[in-house]
Image (cartoon, rainbow, N blue to C red; front, side, top):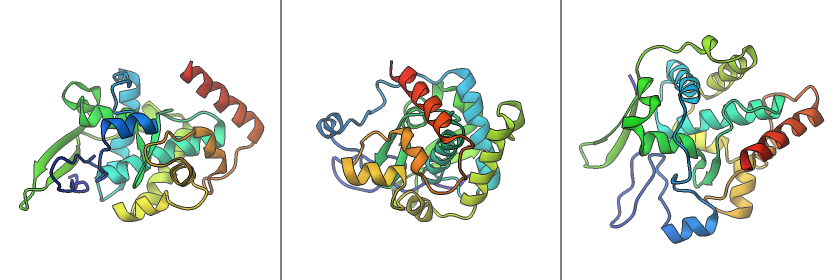
Length: 231
């Protein structure tokens, strides 16, 4: 079964993400480049099937089913594949939140569109109040993963490697993993501030996950894909 996520902090008039991070005011978000999800298109069925199977796989290998670890898992999978091949697994849009990167498309589907989202076929996402009347979040699987049906061999290898690395991490340890100097989140958060978008080209400066066979070719591929996405 899934585990509860990071608690929502208390405070009059203050809102928090399931990751435990306070949501900035509308003015602060607009000024920082942060998106509240209004610009994010609903997830298509193909992406949802791939992401749903990745989340099921993550839950099968991680004892902690909280959103902090979920976001880090997706981030490392996406950026590791981008670094090694120039082609990310999902190519989501990430912002530098206080405790690490947040994939905006995933946040939108779970927090705001869950009931109508195709992700609801794969995971159960719910809010509940604990004994202290604090809001908590729980993610449970709805079946077993079938990553071989939707991911390439290379993608499966990366999913396995990231899941193995993160298997025993607490939410705090997962957060610390993205705070290492040179990590894309750390570079953006420390230079541009909270909610700034994270350029996926920074994946090539990440430590770990190996090196691409042809770094220049990988960079060209990723640059082209990001240009297409932005167009």
